[in-house]
Amino acid sequence: MEQDAGVQQLLVEFRQLLPAQCLTAQAIDRHEPFDRIAVKAVEDGYIEFAQRFTQFMELCLRKGQ
Image 1 (cartoon, one colour):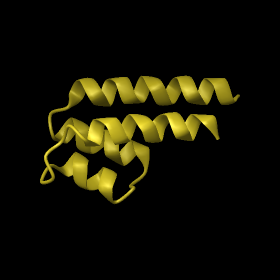
Image 2 (tube, rainbow, N blue to C red):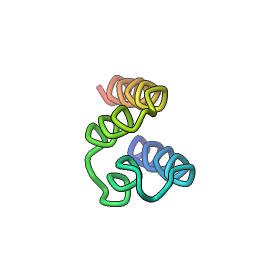
Image 3 (tube, rainbow, N blue to C red):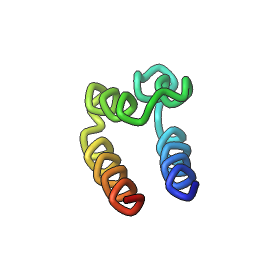
């Protein structure tokens, strides 16, 4: 699944930028669903990432239809 690979790569790159103690990093490390990771990103103050991530997911879903 090409879409999953793109999302995973985005998460890997983003995770490298995060301190281990933040909720977003912990959610990524636990392989939580993408929507929960986005919520944690908002809670941690990474609003721009959450918005970009949501747009990316919407685009992936549209392509899959």
